[in-house]
Image 1 (cartoon, rainbow, N blue to C red):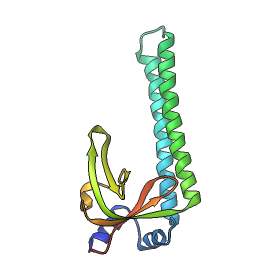
Image 2: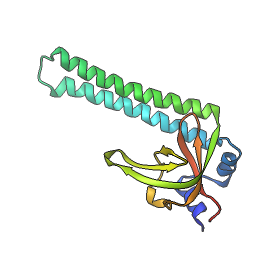
Image 3: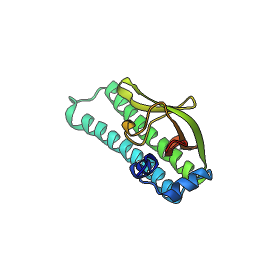
Image 4: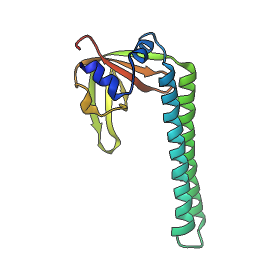
Length: 160
C-alpha cells in the first residue's frame, strides 16, 4: 500500500472522492462530511454558551454586576456567532461544490498554542489529519473546498 492509499484511508476517502476532486468538485460524501463538521462547530458554540450561562448562574457570586452580565453575554454571543458562521460557511461550500487544487511542496509548522498548520503555495490550512502523516517539503496536490477554505483531500504529486 502506497502513501496515496494511506492518505485516502486516514481521511476516510475513496478513489471516487479523489476523482471528483480532480474534476474540480466535492463528492457527495465529502459534502456531507464538511456540513457535519460545520454542524459540530455550531453545537460546540451552543455548548460553550451554555457553559458560560451555567457559570453565571451557579458559580459566580450573586448578585451579578452589570459588567458580569455584559462579559458573559458577550462571550456567549461570540461563541454562538462563530459556530453559526462556520456552519453557514460549510453549508455554502457544500452547495457550491467547487474544489480548488493547490500543487506544490507542503510545509508543516506549529503556531505556539494554536496548533499545527499545513502551507502550500503560500496558503495555510489546519490539516484534517495528524501532520506526521505527510512528508514535509515534498510536493502534493492539496484539494480545498473553496467557500469553506478547508482541505478535503490530499495526494502526492507524482512521487508515490
